[in-house]
Length: 441
Image 1 (tube, rainbow, N blue to C red):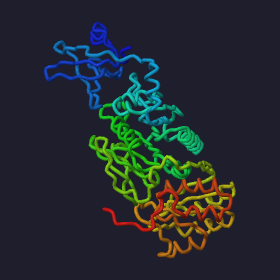
Image 2: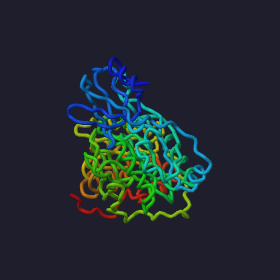
Image 3: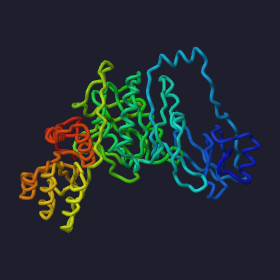
Image 4: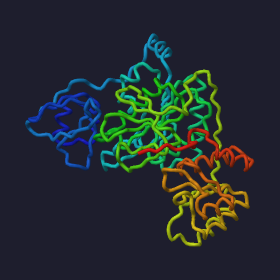
């Protein structure tokens, strides 16, 4: 199809029977480059071609009369497995890939240059042929959405799919997910999937797999190795650990946050230590103190209800007294929970404390987290905190605001008794609350 190519360069490619996906060599005055021919932006200057190099990076090469192009290998057609190959596949360890969308499942629209959702898991697994050769891959294209559109119904759908995959023999789950709300989904799965016998890994990319310097290949390669080799089960997020392609980092699903809009090492573990680093397929464990050992005999269970009538409010300097009206409105509209991102140790302006008391008297769960991210809530230090305690508000200990929000939705969705729900909310379920915090630089 030669998507995005036109003019003389297209004629030459056609003359040599070269198409998108073929392995070619391009010889220039600066050197020789071998790689897979990629589509290119149609709206940009037409006189160059795009190659995906063996290391996963894309490069653009300007075409001129002195440039030579040579076909090395045609893209291999899909083949039907023979009987003996089918049996061999059955004997391999089963790893399930569940696609939900996001940048890692997106590609460039070569007419506009914009990123849009794609829907082909094969595009990803083609990046790591050696890694997947010794596994039996189940591919489930569950949904095709960008992560800003994820909601609790999607969490439930993903949870049930993972449950079914593990119950039918899968020994590891890899979920491709958009990065913007990956932390929310990781927390939701950490609470909804109980007694996991094998690892569940959320993986994404800051740049789509057909962009130069995409982080998709290394992230996926590392996630696949962790799914197979990890000694521990649980829900994890795996992304780049640095801005180059040196290593990836495994984060606990309830402790991870996206801390940068675009860097490849955007994800950081907060108020805890990372689980592991993965360098060239080798796992270097850092902190596994709260993790369960992988155990095929462990029976997974599902608690996948989430209460949607939960609201997040952020406190800020010069917040108007009318914020009390919002709290009252939410209470009267039947909201079951309100989470505040408070300041410092867990504070809100005095002007809204009476409204919080009104909410808790009406049976609303109100909890206070901190905008500081690092550190622990302590509402016993200042007068405001003590008034909040008296009003019935709960402190979120050292939970991330996103994790606390998801946990509130989960406890209210699974425990009808409010007092029981409050007790579970303040109980460490999936590593989201630390008994004590260590000093971390």
